[in-house]
Image (tube, rainbow, N blue to C red; front, side, top):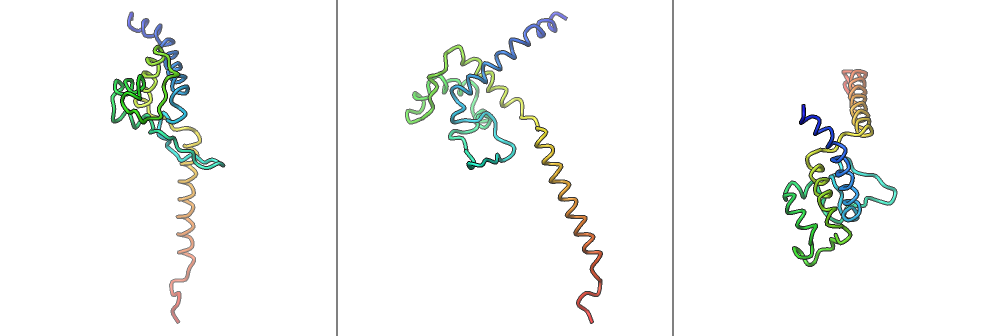
Length: 147
């Protein structure tokens, strides 16, 4: 019971750390990186704007959080030619950023309502096409082309 009470008391602090990490990511990383690989191709009037850097969920599948944190602390020490600029991050924001990035990999993106509706629409269109093709096949005479 004591553990449950402790967990309930820590929940707001953990949510706050998550939000601070997301703010830190948006402040220093989001210009070039996206946190998650998009599940559907974005459509834009101005064309598709691809991130310059890799998607962070893909990076974290190959690298550990410690390696990513080392990179964020000093990217130019690891790769002097990088355009990655993390000078806007304060040292205390690194913990929040690291915890946010940990949730990016652990928690896959949830299917949005729009994604579910699109999937249903595609399935219904395929079913209609199949029904139409069957009806068309039945309506054609069997001795087609024979005299």
